[in-house]
Image (cartoon, rainbow, N blue to C red; front, top):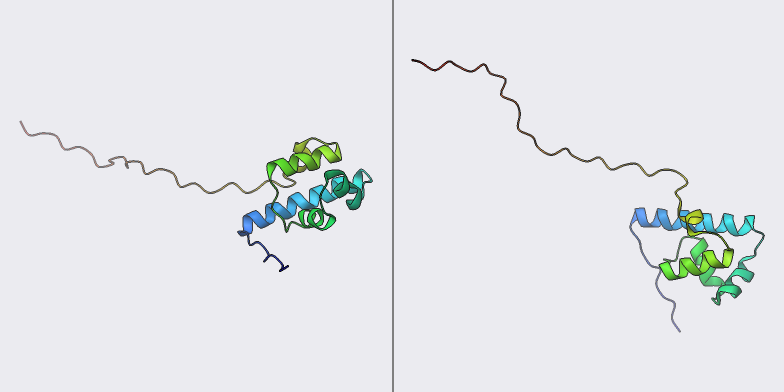
Length: 108
């Protein structure tokens, strides 16, 4: 059996997956649950769960739901950003510039 190549993500997705994995790790440790016990409870291989906590594995909504159920926490606990993401700089729409020249009076 050949190893599956590591999935590549864009930098923003990589950061989000890493943040999610760190939150799952902290939450699990805070609750005193080992990776082995949680992986067993979820019915998944330990290495697959470890890759999720390391931010190397993409997570489906279904799997995220199973993980938070296994931890006994609400999904918002692991999805809430630890630091706010910077807001994108939006270009304002082009507005017509006001005409600042004085109007010439019409000739009679």
